[in-house]
Amino acid sequence: MSTTYLEFLRAELVPGLMEGLWTSIVVIVPSAALGVLIGVLAGVLRVYGPRPVQRLTEAYVSLFRGTPLVVQVFFWYFALPYISLGGHSIVLDAIPASILAFGLCSGAYQSEYIRGGLNSIKRGQIRAALALGMTTRQAVQSVVLPQAFRRALPGCGNEIIYLIKYSSLASIITVGELTGTATTIAKNSWRNIEVFCTLGVYYLTLVTLATWLLHLAEDAMSVPGFERHKS
Amino acid sequence: MSAESLIPPVLEARTLGKTLGGNRVLDAVSLALPKGCVKVLIGPSGAGKSTLLQCLNFLIPPDSGTILLEGREVNGKSRRELCALRQQVGMIFQDFNLFDHLSALENVRVALMKVKGMSKLDAGELALAELARVGLADKAALYPANLSGGQKQRVAIARALAMDPKVMLLDEPTSALDPELIGEVLAVIRDLAQNGMTMIVATHQISFSASLADEFLFMEKGRVIESGSPTELLRRDSGSRTLAFCAKISELSGEADEMGAESLI
Image (cartoon, rainbow over all chains, first blue to last red; front, side, top):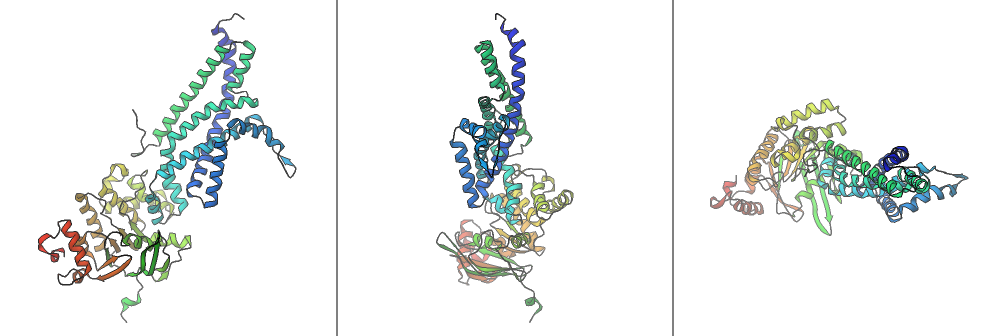
């Protein structure tokens, strides 16, 4: 019981958290990808879709932004199995349920950033694309969206950083990711200060890494007029 | 009957009408653009010039009337017919509307690939040739953010020409330009006209258009109220509305001053 922090770190905490870190990444990466994908789709449909589809995507955004994420996580994990359609029901394991919950919630926020990006592009460019004989879909795909995405990228990155942190909610439905693992170690060792401070460092590192990757992405897509302004 | 009258105009509008926000923006406007002719739309702002041009390629769908391309009526409800029409009708906008995320070359190339299905290589070659035609081959790699207004408008013209249109609609092509940049764009337009491109131009460049136009169309309150050759309409004793209007804007821009309207031509 009287081992030093460094010994505790080496023998228990780091091996445990490393396993948790891997599980966290398994949850975060697909959720972020799903979020961006849904965000782009929902964002485009909200601006350029037919009226009924616009309404539908608006309802999606209100629902997933308007309810607590914990409630959504509980729904996909605990409630979904009880919904039976024609005798079939879907039971999701904890990790897929978390990915679905995080992806859908993240997508709702991402769609707002994308919508803002789309609206910031002058209508004249669509008119020019249509005047060349493009269909509306071609104009959105090859003219408006690439610009809107560049404009929306800082906001989308922000949402991904949020996602990294709210992925800790997966621990409440038994996913052994960073926070879940840390809680278990803390319970068994009673070394709460060391465990949770070290846990904080892990998240800080993840977020720093993600920020750096997002800046790389911004620079890779940078063209004159769409640069990242370095201070 | 002369042979000419047997050939339908490249583009024709019959009794176009459009109401926007309760305003009669176009009131039964008809016009025909025979092959190789240059017509110039003039008139006060709000007269409906821009709306008329955008109705001709259905960017603004007209409420009534018909558009005929080489004598065949265009069905504005059919997406395929619209895309086909727009490929053959090039349009130039007042504020250029270049695609900001694409280089000059890519701006010209993108529709060739997406709309005409050309390969990247062929489209790139053609795009470069079109840029050379407007004197911008050396700017192919630059993005709109790094081009001057005049260069942007010339890229926009190259982009439209690359589609090989049968007729060009130019909506105040020099109105957003600094005075010292207008000349380079007018030179490209003059070159086009002299090479036989069928065109309709909305502009306030009176003396320039008078030297090019086969016909002036003077619009006011959604109607074409006068039309005729520039020489005819701008004759000092013609008493035309066109003359009064042109004298006024030329006076403001210092084109004619005390020498009188005849110096407009």
